[in-house]
Image 1 (cartoon, helix red, strand yellow):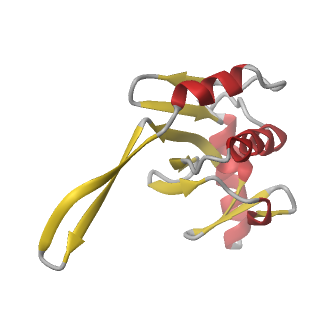
Image 2: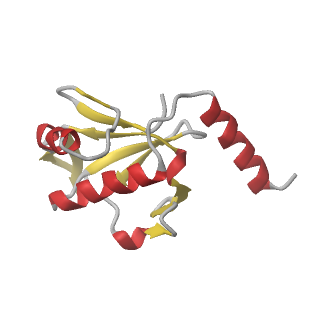
Length: 140
């Protein structure tokens, strides 16, 4: 069995074992909402078949392939592979000057504003919000 077929079978089984909340069209709509805010959003994505959390930013329209795949700097994946996306309220970047550790760069993200956009959207999206993060679920 070739690698693509094996991956497709594993993905199908993983999706079957969970409740699906997002379709490819809903993910595209979600990314359109994020782009409309014109605020660079830093997030992490968790894929169904991967336990690794990956850095993620708001994709441009050119980052999509055939409206089914998304290209990030770390690889290409299908939108239906997204288990969830986490957007933290606060993002810290470590800064160094040679051997000296500088104070971190801090960015605050407007989760409440994003929640309001999701609530007013024409498509219902499953999410949890707390003081620390907003998580949009593809599967649960």
